[in-house]
Image (cartoon, rainbow, N blue to C red; front, side, top):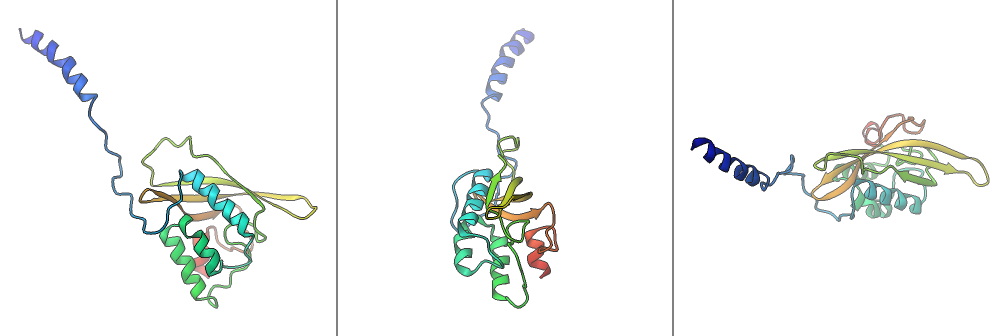
Length: 182
């Protein structure tokens, strides 16, 4: 009799266990007080680079107008670092394009897709970016950088850019290091 009861209850318990919900590994993914750009990490990163290309290369720190346009794409920390750098222009003698591994900036950018990342609860995702600078009538210079995307609330934002081939104008390996070391 006991085995019949267990045999009858086991399939029912198995069926009920399949109906439970799974909570994400990270419930608290932070907050975001500013605007939010729609899309996953790769989509937001591509939109960021598209805006940067539209703005044209910056020979130094972005001015307040460019920075305001970039704010929805940037993490709170990176945005604040750029604001602080703009408020102390004498301290931050930046030459060349901060957002790429080439002093002249990029004329095209293609962000690698994030579709192969298995962890949907990820809080940060590094993505490779293929960049190039096409000189007028000349040959193109190609290189790669890595953009670190982080979650703030439900938004994906740029938190840092790692120069894979440290350019002479940067003297450091990442955008935030350049801002800190200047």
